[in-house]
Amino acid sequence: MATRCGWAEGGGDLLLEYHDREWGVPSHDDRHLFEILILEGAQAGLSWTTILNKREGYRRAFAKFDASKVARFDDARRSALLADPGIVRNRAKIEAAVNNAGRVLEARKEFGSLDAYVWRFVDGATRIRRSRAPAPAETAESRELSKDLRRRGFRFVGPTICYAFMQSVGMVNDHETTCFRHDEL
Image 1 (cartoon, rainbow, N blue to C red):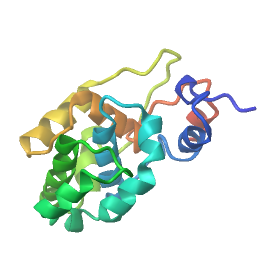
Image 2: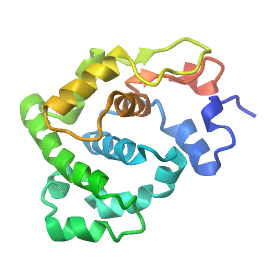
Image 3: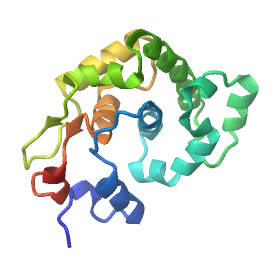
Image 4: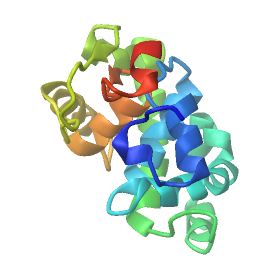
């Protein structure tokens, strides 16, 4: 049996699959980056397992994370999302997701892609943590990303959410050094 990061152990098959195949893998796909940004914001105050269990509901409800479509969600569509049991029915998180879609479009205009925008906070290369200690909740880079996102009008993008985003999309390799994925990535 492979040794994994402690947070993934005992979390069920969905969490193990996420850890083993997705978490920490460098992503440069704008749609995936937008998806993870929205899901990390939705996770605030909840468990990641809760969000993973609702991920397909989010994909359906948020037009497979097509930022151009989500940015056009009108009041009726946003209200309907409040009744959707497939997602976290929190008005502030839903409004933030729609708002953030518009901000993603603006970032694409300025930088060419969401990928180019976010990856510049790590100089385009994955930061590798080589420690057995638990990962920090935030870093200087996540605080910088959070500050810039908020300045641009994004919501639900505090430094802890931004660090979780950075870990998820491989901007940081935070797999424990004893985890089989650490050296693979």
